Length: 151
Image 1 (cartoon, rainbow, N blue to C red):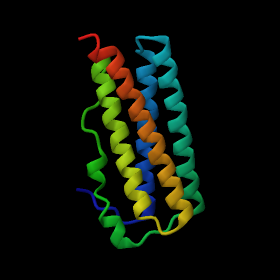
Image 2: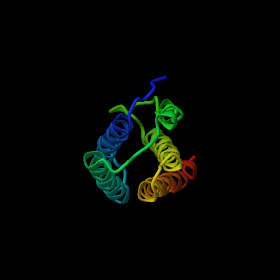
Image 3: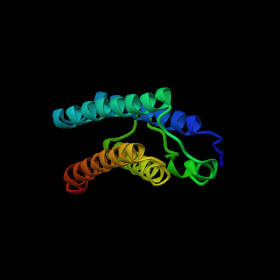
């Protein structure tokens, strides 16, 4: 497991996770089965772009301070999703992957909020966690409506 040695490394990791999410949702948007889901994926990609911008601003302005000991306890690898999207991925698998990605992102931001040493950063990470949990719920509802009910 990778041990992070600075807050910048953690933020770089989170920023990259957001970019990966943008790419993922853009790919799902291209392969959407319904216009409604195409719109949802497009919206989620835009939201992930906003998340990335917020995290980039935090890094560039140096607004986040965290003690070294807390960094090593984050266990970032727990927040990675090992399955990668593929061009031939069916819709139900894509939804499951999206749910897993959102759950991992939620856990990451909750952990970061618990380790934040100022209220502004705690609020930022809690806000991002809430948004990721809403994304997961949207995918769960879509899965229930269009995968489970069709089977």
